[in-house]
View 1 (cartoon, rainbow over the protein chains, first blue to last red):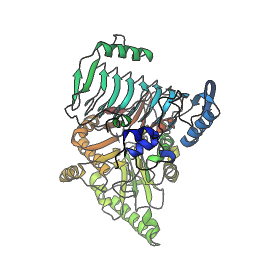
View 2 (tube, rainbow over the protein chains, first blue to last red):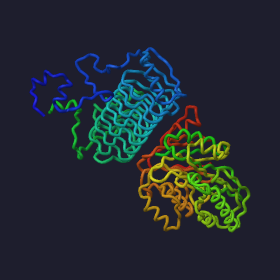
View 3 (tube, helix red, strand yellow):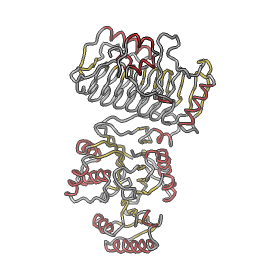
View 4 (spheres, chains in turn cyan, brown):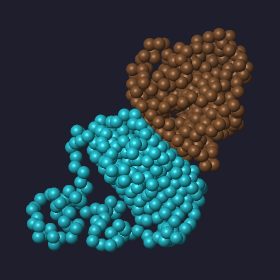
Length: 289
Length: 311
């Protein structure tokens, strides 16, 4: 790669700069197109195609006779019409409902969801008045998801941001590969929770299963109950006043504050013995090049 | 990826045939190859129900002589039953190749079963007072209509929709497995067993026979072996978690019990619903919702969890 001077770089657009630095060699188009948010602009967190919705415009949608695809397309059609609050009735355990919503929206599910519910979202506030199956909120980038009952395994796998809340108990491998954001669990969690966690925080008010935080790189896990066993390179750390303040704020926000307060929580962090990792985001790395 | 489902009514019988059909139809996307049922009815103590097939479904269309071959095999089955001093109370031909006989108790059921299965192409599906095991290629509705399951009254049932991964698409490799030669025990399984050959050789040394190369059959034989040794169903399930390697969730049904076991990694799904009079479980919530439309509380069992329910 030919060397590029600082002056030349400054004159380039963001996209040209990325290509010149060798971070991307092909021109991405279509659905794989990356969006470069400009932090100087005021509306920087909106996707260009995001529909303008009004939270006060409310509608109900009965998905009992619909397939998953039909239901998801209908949700998008309602958003195009400007509905900002959508109540979805009779989900009856359907898979992949409410996925891929990349703008602000209030979504309320009156019932239980199946697998991959509300995955790949970036912004909406979701409440599920029921249970969710495996991989709820997988890969979510931003927003708030509140589950009123239990959740299945791999709850919040690979999430990068937002708050993912389950007021009941969750299955195994909660927050596997978590890269950011917050996972809050009101009840217990199963084995291998926080496996390969890279960033973010996870709070479990009940007990945790075996191999908690196995091979975690970074991030923090708070457990209110008993821990069956910690995984490789997961170690206990001191609960600071800052942690307590943060826990109190988060748990109060979602009405999940335990009666005995937050002093009894155990804090688990990475021992960094398996450390071969830097926790910078891709756009931060280019500053070093 | 297969779909498993089970339900048990406490202290009453219900139309478990049609309930299980609805549950399995909802799981069709997890396994389109074959569907199997093990349903438990109110059997009579002195009467045994024997379900068997005389050929594979695909064999029937292979040649014109197949009908004669099947008829010959049926005659042989009748002759061998007579040899063991068994009287046949009723005969029912369900499909071209599947039959349901009600028979009297033999002196040595295992020897009789072995003798009948020695006939080429003949496989006993199930043998027992309450158990009726039905499996065939196609989805739940097809199999249920073919075998007239929609009116089956019973206390509990397990079912399976199969996506063939490591053995053939045929009736022989379809679930559920009857725990030969142990009456009234059947098994459905979702997962892979990685120490299959080690365990199979061990079981073969004890004298057990294997009919297929499907790893799920091992669980049926293993359970039968333990139960024959006087081990309780719960202990057998608990023991299997340590002795059998791999990722699995499996359900076992006996004449009056239904049990489940999950491996140490909890890598295969199961959703449970428990109430005072009905317990339903399935690989996916959508299957439970097929029979319980009202809002209910369900949960995922954790790793190494073993549960047994009494009918």
